[in-house]
Structure formats: structure tokens, C-alpha cells
Length: 411
Image (cartoon, rainbow, N blue to C red; front, side, top):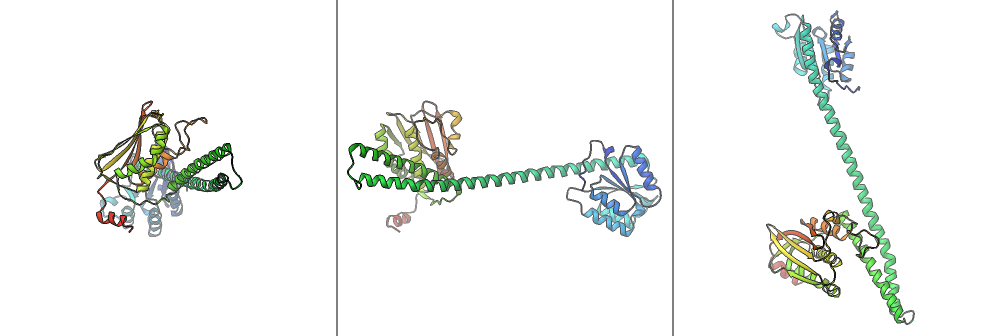
């Protein structure tokens, strides 16, 4: 099918003239061409139908050409038009036809087609005016067609791009999971052999050898921790993490996290301040995942807070949400990094000589976990004055006493 692209001037648009007998057809074509309209003569219904399938602009049809056979063929062809198309028809009726009852042939076409009836003899100015009006309407139809086509192309491109991105994401997640598993296997072996050496299985160790084995074990545990972060990220990305959402007591959640980090904070010379006083405050969350987020935030805060500094955990209720914040008195975060730090594998200090260890997955995992529980994780900071990370979770009523007793009793 030819792609019909109308010009700005209706005078350059194709018109098909269907007049199989007499001189009406050639005469009409000649008149139109003198007025700058490109017209083609269609002496048979087959050539007219071809013109319709080629997206012609307007049809000019003589009434006597609409005998039953050609008329039905024309109506079938018109019915095959796409939804955006309604090709204009200008039907030249017999003299005095419109002052009497309309013939069956004209009525059938006019009822099912976009028809304009002109009674012969037709004034040339009237015909040209009707044609130009019809061509303008036809141009609008093709503008709609072009818009629809462009939209379909954009949607197809968007679907293809989304499919490619999802496939790339699946491949990335699979790669991370496989590589993390493959790396963990030899590291476990390293840890095992180091433990055998420490136990003296291969002979007594000197003090320097004990120190070397201890450093091997520390490095092995550190690498295993990094690999576990990558595995956690891969599981979050793949959507395979299960959540057990229940009412969780905020004060208990904070106390548990405090207990786990307290020895490390003491060794770093840091002070932890708690501003969580409402013992009866609950959130809807997975207790283990919420604790993991808090530990990630506290671990980050400790990395970037110098000795003698402090960390503060606080909570506040805002409407139907509870905000649990972890603030530090550390180096702070540049304003242009406040969002990018939540992207996977992004770190504020990307230099090879940076002093803060990690792969840049803790915050990415934490935000994904928070959002999966119906909450969020945000950051605010003033460079040189510290940073504050806020975990937001849905407010909950306390768990029913029966459920608490059942849990306490082991079932």
C-alpha cells in the first residue's frame, strides 16, 4: 500500500474519478487538473478499489456508475478502511435528483460512506470548493494516522527497551549470585585451613605466626561479609526475599541494634545516644529486615565518624508513619551525592586509596528493603557536620496479647 502523505496545499492531493460511461470522467479530470488538482480516471470499479487501497485522497463518483454490482464492491472496500480512515466521497447526481426522492444507489452509499451530494450540472467553483473541503478533512485523517503510527512505534520501542533492560537486569543478578557463590567456596576453605593452623594441627605456631593467621581470618571474614552483601543485593533485585510483616516494637528494635554495635562503637571511641522513649510504639515491618537496615545505617555512620564523635538514634511519629533516624557527627555527604549514594556500587569516596571499606551495596539494599515493607529510606546532610538517615515505616497498633503469648510459648 502506498503511503499517502498530503502536502500543505490540497491542490497537490490525488483525486480518483469514477465515471465508466460518457464524457463525465475525462471532462472532470481535465477540469480538476486545470485547477491544480492531481486527478486520475478510474473507468472500472476494480481501479477505483485499487485507488482506495492506495490511500487516495477523495473519490468523485458519477451516480450512474453505482449499479448494484459495483456499488456492493465499493461498499465492501470502504468497510475495510482502518479505524482512522473515512474517505470522502463526492457523488455527482442526475439533474433534479436532489429535489426528488434519493435513489436507492445513492442512499446506500451515502448511508454507509462519508458522502457529499452535488447535483448536475455542477458549477466548477462549487465542485472545487467541495473538493478542497473534503481534502482538508482527509488531511486531518492522515495526521491522526501518522500520530497513531508514531505512538505505536514509540510504545514498541519502549516495550523493547524495557524487555532488554529486564533481561540485562536478570543476567546481572544471575551473574552476581553465581560469582558470589563461587567466591565464597574457596574463602570457606581458606578460613578452615587457617583455623587448623591456629589449633596447632600442623605444629605449634610462634607468636608472629599466630598474628599472621589472625590477620588471614580477619580478611576472610571481611571478604565473606562483602560477598554476603552482594548475595543480598542479588536476592533483592531478583525479588526472591520473603517478608514476614508483623507489628514490631520500635524501642526493642533499637535496643537490639544497640546491643550488636556497642562493642565496636566502644573500640572506636564513639558515643551512642538513644532518643526513643515511647515503649508502646509499633511499626508494620519484618523485624529481621528492619534490624538489618538499622545495623547498615549504624555501620555506615561509624565508618565516617572520627574518634570522639557521637551517633544518635531517634524516633518520631508523623501521621500514619514512624520515622527512625540515625544521625552522626561525621564528615557529612556532599549535596550532589545524597541520592546517588542509594545506587548500587556507589560510594562517596571512589578513590582506590579510600579508607572506608565496602562495595557500596548497604544503602541500596536498605532502601530496597524499606520500600518493600511499605516504607522508605532518605538522607540529609550538611558537609562537615554529619549526616542523618531516616527509615520510615508504617505505624502499627501493638500485636494482640494472644499472639505475643503464643510466640513466647514457642507456638
